Length: 191
Image (cartoon, rainbow, N blue to C red; front, top):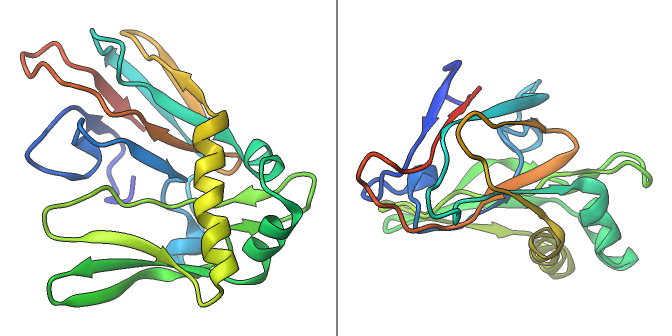
């Protein structure tokens, strides 16, 4: 993962914010994309293993292939996402700072595009936004996230289930859910 660990526990931790906050839908993203971080590599994929499923069946992993996202956009929106970069900004009380480097949300061949959506969950210390110097690109990015949500598959992982996610070919997220906080909540191991 981004912190260098091999396995990460994903369990509800309502007071922390971030990806373990169950009350917030985690919007679509690729994990640690090199296009955002500026790194020379990124994870090809990862596994989600359910040690425990959500007893209320509300917490679902959302998956949307890059091809579906691209197909749901107009040709003008796809062109805008290829033409101009977007940038993730963190907004704090003290001001706004860039997170990573500017990136093109669509790269690669038309018939097999690499779509990079990015999201930082709400946090008590900051929020985030995606911006572009090109208003058409900024609007197209928002639309790409909407398309992903409209045509995604939702997977209800229960104990013993494992989901293999190709980080280069799809974007993923998680639905919001109401945790019980009694030791029976969804618990995923991510590696």
